[in-house]
Length: 367
Image 1 (cartoon, one colour):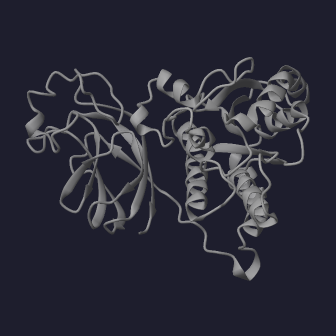
Image 2: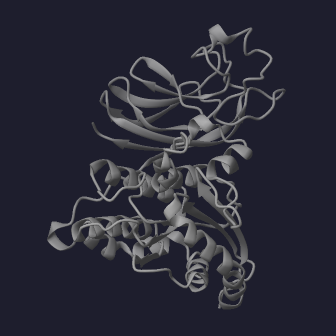
Image 3: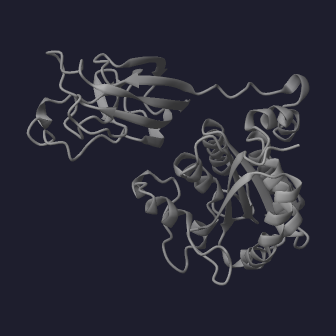
């Protein structure tokens, strides 16, 4: 028995290259029936949003891009991992499934208390199309998995008919990445490389599977994911290090020491959320700081870093760097321990009347 009041947010995301048009049309036609059937089979408070990757399909449900949606709710385009579409000859931008999973996991306006799920559809490599899975493609899938897990987002992955004939080895590698993205995030995978599926049934299944708590699903699928990655049994690869998570209080003048020491060139992904303010008389703001603060220009030179008031900063060694709401694949500019700081005037008790805090998640990949 499922709880009809349980919130489920499902984002359906599609590769908008020309070869995916049939899938977009078939999925749109089956949507209404699938949602009604899902309400009967596994009732929930369901919210569904359809988005295309750097493109749309007319006469389907996919009439808005992920970029349009996210910037429309206030996300800074500069914070997005997926690159913008560069014109008619830039079809690979429309196939950035892995990068767009990162963006939606981090920035979509998920409802409080809702189970979060993405249903992604593509035919070629998750990093921008093509039939070859190289080290870069694997790394981008890893980053998509990390962003989804860090934000408790379950990813269901659908691979459809390939537009050109791959070798058996290429097809196995491509399918493996779709499966890995789903399994490592607790999602379901659907492999239909020989024709269209019954999208009504597929979507219904994905909706129902989205109601299972993500942590339970990840644990259940761990062995299959290990096998796909070639790490089953005694040869199992070491588990990926858990992300560092902590909270920076705005009144903490010394900042929060992470205990994470980096080398120059290490890659960092940092995500931040929360609210803070510089004293009782000023408005609340997020980790990006308050650029409209009355003292922004007047006192800028006295802040820890001459940038936006109240912003989240990262100190590495003796240098400070603006982080704001986060960075993806940022190259550490120096050696040293990472300390997160709140950008206020140092000394003279200036931090004491601040309020609020930022929640921070950080992953490191060594150079």
